[in-house]
Amino acid sequence: MFEVTILGTSAAIPTHRRRPSAQVVTINDRHHLVDCGEGTQMQLLRHKVKYARLDAIFISHLHGDHVLGLPGLLNSLSLYERNFPLKLVGPAGLKKLLDFIFEQTHSYLNYELEFVATEDFSPGDVVYETPKYKVILLPLEHRIFCRGFQFLETNKRPKFDFYKAKALEIPNQYFSLLKQGNSITLDTGRVVTPDEVLIPADPPLSFAYCSDTRYSEVLVDYIRDTHLLYHETTFLENLKERAAETHHSTAREAAEIARLAKVHQLVIGHFSARYKDLTPLLDEARAVFPNTHLAREGYVYDLKGIS
Ligand SMILES: [Zn+2]
Image (tube, rainbow, N blue to C red; front, side, top):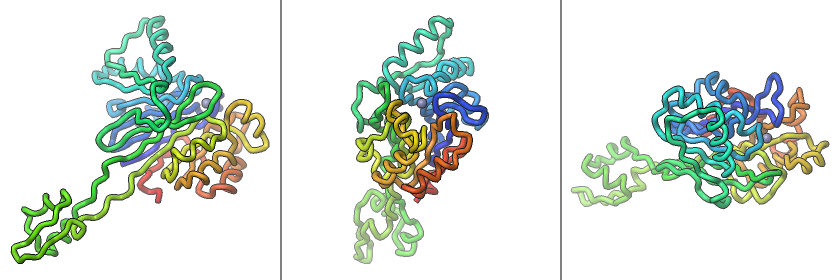
């Protein structure tokens, strides 16, 4: 299982239909929250994301629309009596910010917050790892220090074709040797090689989260061939200068990054509150990269369905 749930699609100011940035990446039933704008905990409840399965939170940068929901969420986890550690990956200032808020509000967390400062790593470094997947830091160029995150499956093993093994009349005792990649010799003298009974593993799935950033081709090498790319699209191309000034991207620029990186699918979000109708943003991006979709709150992307 590898899914991405969009919780917020607005840029700096929320609208009555769009909330600030937040997404949940779910891999094998474990949740990872990426950015935590104001109101994210209500979105988590609304979309039935179970807190008990939340293992880690990743914060791209310290602008309010990406982080102001975090103190409230961490406090609620404590009130829900969480009793196992939570990994928090983000800029070093985040720790200071939380310590100050918790001190001034006399809040106490009854679980351990394992903080990882993104400044201690370089783009391309692994900042979080489990036996089945890892998270890599991505270089983003914003007005303040900002990093994106790429979730990538690892250690995918070939599957054993039980029916093929049975059809070849291979006794059960040889199965584990074949699964481990060894050839075996049957009593008849026939040699069976692993590739006769192993189905090659599917290519590892990956999701890249890139918000907020100005147009930067430096990103392309890091996200090449990614299955699903979320790239911010704050403006239309006719506000390209405004985008450059504020270190944001236009729809055309996001699509250009997707095209250069040959990603499989692009989702655009982080829309300026000035856009009530998002169709022009979608049309502009699709003109460059046809497999583009608008981020919609509550929508779940199943990466297994993206070829
Ligand atoms: Zn933002």
